[in-house]
Amino acid sequence: LLGAVIGGVINAGWYRWLDAAIERWRGSVSILPPHEPGQPPTTREVLLKVAVSYACWAPVCNSAYLTAMPLLRGESLAAAVDAARRSLGRLMLLEAACFAPYNLFAFRLLPLPL
Image 1 (cartoon, rainbow, N blue to C red):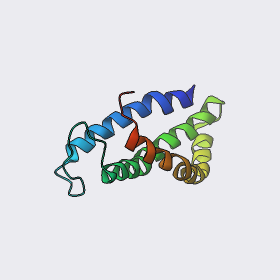
Image 2: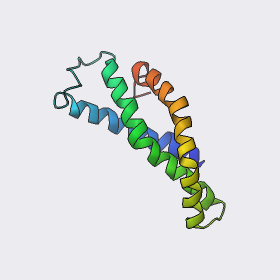
Image 3: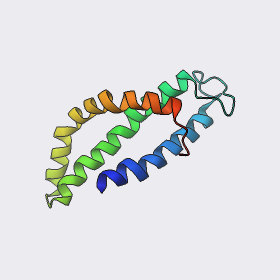
Image 4: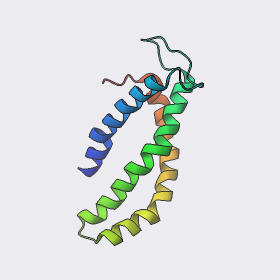
């Protein structure tokens, strides 16, 4: 259930915010060229979304999950934070190996309002 909430509902909000931010940044960030509405995202846009998701959102999301699971098992906050700290590096490597490639595909080909 926790994974569904973080991975589904909260991620959907993040991706909507990220798309809106990309539109706000367009024109003011030199790496984002003008974009015609209705056209697929540019390669630069996709790479920026993947990088921002990995660098900004993935650590927050993964830390929340790694901390919440021990708490739900009745462990102390200190133990939960310690467990998250020990596991986050490995989970971020897995994130890079699995979700970064998936996001390259998803941000390029899947429209946001599914």
